[in-house]
Structure formats: C-alpha cells, structure tokens
Image (cartoon, rainbow, N blue to C red; front, side, top):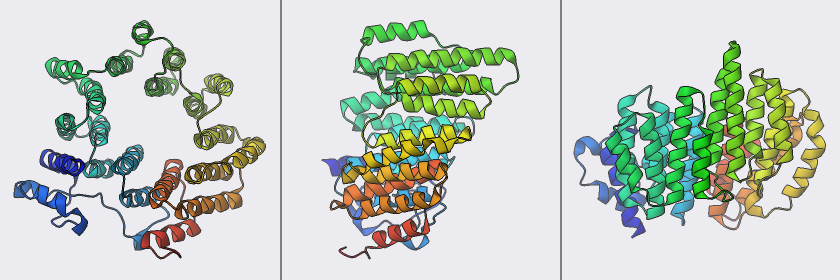
Length: 426
C-alpha cells in the first residue's frame, strides 16, 4: 500500500508539475524500478521533464562550501523509514528556500512521497508569487491534487495551508471556501483563520488581536498552539521592515506589531524563547536597540527548549551577544551546555554538537569549534543504526548551511568516506 501511494504521489507531481526542473532526465536508477513502471504511462512530453531526485553531487564532488547539497545527498541515503526520509527532505527544502535556492526546493518536492511534498510546494509558491506567478499557481494546484492521497489529518494540514497560500495569491472565494470547508479538524481550521489574520496584518500593519483572542477562546485558552509561533515570526518580520524606515510613524507601527507578536506568543502556550532571541538579534542589527533589549529580557524569563534543541537556542543567545560585541561573556554558559550535551543519547549528539560548535566559533574559539564539528560527525557515522546516523549527518550539514559556515576539511573527508562505504566496519 505504501509503495503504491508513493508511486501515485510521484506520478501526480510529475504529471502536474513538469516545471520542477529545467533539465531533462530520461533514465532512472535501478532501485526505482517500481516508480519507473508507474511513470511509464505518462505522455512523452511530460516524462522527459521528470526527475526522481534533486541534483546532488557525487561523493567525489562534496564541497565544504555547500553543506546543503551534502545534506540533500545524505537525506537520499536514508532507508527503511519513508516518514523519516521525507521529513529530512522537507527540512532540506525549507533551508533551500531560506538560501533562495527555489529550484532545489522544487526538485526536493518532486522527490518526496508524502503530504510534506504538498506543504513544501505551497512554501515555494508563496516565495515565487511575485517572480513567477504561473509556476506559483501550478504548484498550488498540484498541492491541492495531493489532498486526496493523504490521511485525514494530513489532508487537513494541506487544506489549511492551501487556504492561507490561496488567500495570499488572491484566488477566487469559491475555491478558498471549498478548501476551508474541507478541513475536518476544528483546531486546524482555526489555525487557517489565524493565518489569514496574519496576512491582513501585512496589508494594514495592524494585527487583529481581538479576532485572535476570540478564536483562541473557542479553541481553549490553555491548550498549546505551536502554530502561533509562525504567526509571531511573521509579525516580527513585518515590524522589522517598519523599524528599518526613517519615518517615525513607521517606528510606531513597528512597536505595535511587536506588541501584537508578544501577545500571540503568550497565547501560544508553548516554549518561545528561540523566537524571541531571533527577533532580538534582527532588531539589534536594524538599529532597534530598545526593542532588542525588551525581547532579550523576555527571552531570559522564558529560557528553555526540549532535548538537544537547547544547543540551537544557546547559539541564538551567543549570536545576540556576538552582535553586541560581548560574546566572551557566554563562555561559562557554553561550557555548561556542552557538559549537558555530552550526556544526551547518541542519536541527539550530532545535532547538539554541531550547534554548539557554531556557538564556540562565534565566541572566538575556532579550534574547539572544529574539534566539536568532527565529534558531531563521528557520533553520526558510529551510530549502530545507519538511518539514525544519516539523520544526524543531515542535521550537521543543515546547521552549517543555516549559519553560513563551511564544513571543516576533516568533517568533509569523514562524510565522504562514510558515503562511499569505505570506513572500517562498513
């Protein structure tokens, strides 16, 4: 059943979205024989544009300057769990979009075989609505076509995002209404409504907090709503644009949007220190020192994150102090954080060590940063479960990609040997 569903996903993606790649690939790998059979019925003009995998370098061409490409390569080597494989590809696709590599994200979406393919398509459509409206519309329609191939809760997630993306693209009310009515889960429907409130704030520079609170009360005032973190991030981004203006009126709008974002975070009932630190760093760089200080103080009061994610949270904290020119003050914090990270289960250490390495580099200890980078990859390659190790390798490379850092020569060499199967015991 899973295999047939995967084939159906790829067929629909290929038939409805030959825009995924500008290149023509006529052959498929031997291990994709079943998918090739599924594709064989496609018209030649569609089939010639179909690619089953994103363009990734061979091991011999791994580049320390492009950790995202290596992350994509390792995500493709994950076997035995399609959910994990698709999750890693999705994370790679989001990072590709953050780097402006939309074509890479499109190819990753074409390769995915679950509901995340639709979610990534909609992320891409929102990025490309101004630069290529035709492609944006095609991606929305392809995502809509994937709804029928997913489980009920997955279909709800896609439909909710379709409503938000469709509103951004100003699609007709009838289509948006059909998608909205198709959402069965009440919580997911409310998140779609809240997402539209965020879009309206982008037009008016004012967020309708009363409407949000009304939705929140209907949903339950104490229940966690992690989706509100993205709403808050969007409001901070809007506020940041106003903060960069020299117009005092824009600064007042920035303050109002920041206040709204803080209200949204408070209503989310989830851990939110990372969002606050990200915004504090952005406002500091934009010259909004008072707002930055306010956000930092709020983050201090709510400081915390689950498991290995504390390492990434510490990086955001170190980054803020680095911008202030006082990163050395974080050394005791990093020492304590590393002690705790070493007590984590092995599956979490590659993620934790790679983010801690980024922190040490910002704090001025490049030697230890490189040592910890290498330790992170060693933890990945030595994991008795190859799939878990591959996930660790993806996380290491994504950490470097998101912070704009190159892989060290030692890490690159170890990654290449592992991918080639040339390490002892392989």
